[in-house]
Image (tube, rainbow, N blue to C red; front, side):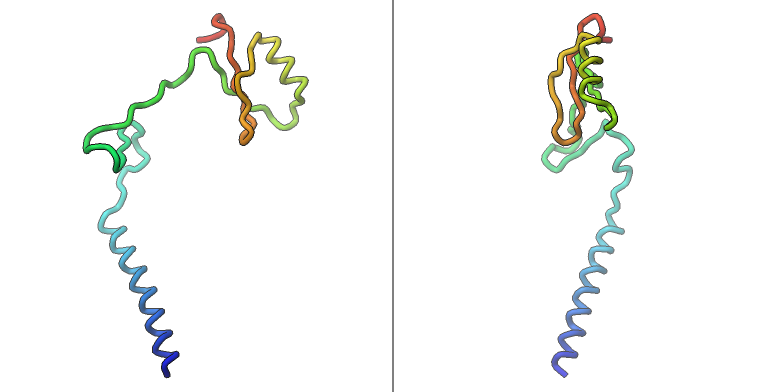
Length: 106
């Protein structure tokens, strides 16, 4: 009998916790969370203060990611042909950042 009561109490506690979290979620939904990147609010900023946006591009850099089929020789040939210098290679995404000549920059 004691095991049965314990099991009922555990299941009741789990259901109560789920009901409370659902009630909190429904009473305070996140409205328009991703709709506007211009108004990013965080709990560490004062109310009404927004995060500054980064520039849309860096004028003398290009980020490139090649397909797996492209050989290192082809990549080097393209880079030399464009007169670019390799600034960074990501070990996670294998994307490359190249510095380009000022005449090639927008």
